[in-house]
Structures are given as C-alpha cells and as structure tokens.
Amino acid sequence: MRLERKLMLEWAKGELKGTYQVGGSPAVLHTSGIKEILNQPHRDYALKNRILFALEEVLENAEFVRTDPNTKANPLISQFHYYKIQVNQQDSFLVLRELANGERQIYSVVESLQ
Image (tube, rainbow, N blue to C red; front, side):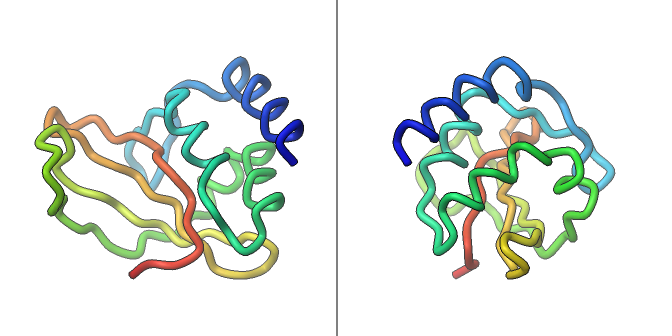
C-alpha cells in the first residue's frame, strides 16, 4: 500500500493540482491536500485514495452538508466545509478548509463527521 500511495502522490501532483468547482464555488487542490487525502485513515483506505482518479466526477456529485467555524488555534483558517461523497457505496465526507483570505482548499476525505 505504501508503494501505491507513493505512486498516486507523484501522479496526482502532476495531474490534479489546480482549481475545481465544489458546490458552485472554486476550491484549490494543493500538494498538501493531496497528501492529506492519501494519508487520512479510512475504513476503505485504498478505495478512498482511488477517488483521486475520478476527482472531477466526485466533486460534481458532492452534496453540501454543513459549514463549521474553525475552533482551533490556527488563525489562517476561518472555517471548514463538509460535502458528502461516496466511497465503496458508503457515505464519506470531503473536507474543504476556507482560509481567512477567502480561498477554499480541498483538504481531506474522512469517513465520518464528529
């Protein structure tokens, strides 16, 4: 799995970095977001990582769930946006973080919201 993750990271850095539409607004995918998606624990870890191969389709079908303010000590992040997606026919959540300057970043994929 480590080799697959490493290969996916290199591929995604060359192919996926850029701006996408999520929920009708632009969101940027940086290398840090790719790494976070690939490293995030998940019940279907390998399938969760493979959503990168169909990222545009996943983003088109993402359903807005909620926005939460940032309650942690990082003043650069103002809030988090959560979108429901499917991984192996089960709900998971795409996490976007919004910076204080208004930029939205694709940040992670998690299996549940707490």
